[in-house]
Every structure is written in structure tokens, then in C-alpha cells.
Amino acid sequence: MKAAVLKSFGSPLVIENVPEPVLGTGEVIVDVVATRVLSYMNEVFSGERNYALDLPIIPGPGGIGRVRATGPDATKLAVGDWVFCDPTVRSRDDIVAPDIALQGLTAAGPGGMRLQRHFRHGSYAERMRVPTENVKRLGAITSAEASQWCALGTLLVPYGGFLAADLQPGETVLVSGATGNFGSAAVSVALAMGAACVVAPGRNDRILTDLVRRFGDRVKPVKLTGNASDDCESMKRAAPGPIDCVFDIMPPSVSTTVVRAAIMTVRAYGRVVLMGGVGMAGGAGLDLPYPWIMRNCISIHGVWMYPPDAASRLIALVRAGLLRLDEYATTDFDLYHVNEAVEHAAANGGPFRLTVIRP
Image (cartoon, rainbow, N blue to C red):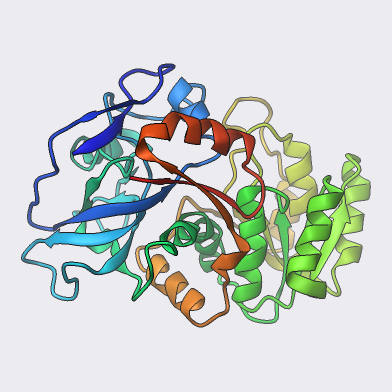
């Protein structure tokens, strides 16, 4: 089959013929129809992000496709089914604290690297091998719709954070990083889950205005000034009442003072979700005040990805019309133009934009 292969960091992806994946027990072979390109994939491939990848590798985290073959332990999947391939691969021998690898992207720790050695190759190929439990049925879609369904991979990240925080209908949420790709997805997911109000701080007036245009007056935009104490008060004032949950998805380049200002808006007994990249490039720590956390009974959830059943539950929100994929504008590339796709994603990584490869 044809695939895009990363042979060394800092070099372009190479399109070449590679062996087809071989089906094993507990696995499914999927014909890849569409797969998204993360806006920071260029940083992964250059080595700048220092992701754990054992090269050479076919990259690509997850995607949309059709079932080609199933193993003997699959009783619901059928050949030809439209499916979402969840890239979050978990070890099967410790359900309490599984090792995790993101297929075609990175791995966490030695256990994750062991997983990657088997489920290493991702979706920048005509076919891929996926753990059975990671193949989620979509129902009937058209081939043209597959590109927009790639948005599931983005939407699932904040959905996992809100599940960890036990977000309830009627609550008020603050999304720290609301003007970014994942942050804008968090705004839409929180509203789909029933949030009464989403406070959306940011510096980009155009994007803040667009969030209100898309989702109405349940979104409360706040223009940040860079003064932490003033911004903290502005965010509190924008909310109609106490802020129940703060969700942070800021990138590595952002100062911890910006994140701290957002976190300090949460009410007593409130919850904070940390899913961003702050601190991963070095620098100062978050430095939250111990007495404030303790006396106000603040719950802080560090969350990487989402639980195994999240994808099916999110698909149900889309099918119910609560979460709209047509918010996303897609730009498609074929496999032979994968390097152009990576460049395009880096230059066009704003809210509700998807760069898609269609092998």
C-alpha cells in the first residue's frame, strides 16, 4: 500500500510502498478515507516538540475510514462500516492505570513505547491496523462527509476534560485558551453538554466576536489586557454567577501567569481542568497558592485525552444535533501532497479549521 513515512526528524515525509498491515486477534484493519493534520505536526516532524517516536514511522493520529477486516473478537463491527479510529491506545493488562500511546503520534513512558512498537503506524496511509476497542461506529455517512467527521479528534480532547470534571447542565464554564483550535472546540463541547454560559477570554477580538456569532449570548467574551489581576476580575464579571469549572488548553508558548489568572476565577468547591501544554517548553511552574486550594476545596484535574467510551458518547451528541460538525471548514489534500498539507495546517490552525489528508 501507499503510505507517508517519517524516516528522520527534520526531513520531509516520503511517499512509498510499504507492506500492508497484517490482522491479528484484537485488531481491525481499516481503509483510511480521511485523517486530520494537527496544526503543530510540523513541530513534531522537525523534532522541536520532542515527541516520543521510534522512527521510521507512518504518522497520523486516528481518522475516518471503513472496516476492511475484523478479528474473531469483534461481534458488532462489519466489513464496510464507517468508523472513527481513536488514536488513544491503552495497554490491556492494567485497567486502573494503563500505559498509553497515541498511535502515529507519541507515547508516554517505557510502557507507552512498548505499545508503540506494535501499534506504531498511523493514518497517513491507505490502510491501518487499530485495536478493536478503538474502532467506533459512526453510522451511515458519505465519503464527502468524512473530512468534517475528522473534527471528532479535536472535539474529543476537551470532551475528555469536561467528563473528568463532571460538568453538569446549567453550569458556568471558563475556557482558558478559547481563541485557539482546541479552545474553540471546548466552547462548542461545553455548550453541547448543557453549559448555561461559557466565559471565553482571549486577545483576538475577531475570534471572540466570531464565537458569539456562532453560539449566541451563552458565550461571554473577555478581551485580555495582560494584567493578571485586572484580567481575573474581568473574567469573573463576565460570568452571570460563580464560575463552576475552569478548563485550560493553553499552548506551551503561553506564560503561566495567564493560566493562573484564569484558574483563580473558579468558585469555592469548583473544578479546574489542565489539558494544555504550559510548562512543556520549560520555564516557571504554575505556582498555585496552597491555602487557596485547600480552604476553598478546589479540585484540580490533570487530564490527558479521554476515557475509552468517550468517542461513542461524543458521536451520539453529534447524531442528536447538539454538536455541529458543519462549524468546521476543511481543506483536503491527497496523500502525495502530505508535506504541503503539513505546511497548510501550520499556517491555518485557527478555530474551526481542519486540514485533512484523504489517502
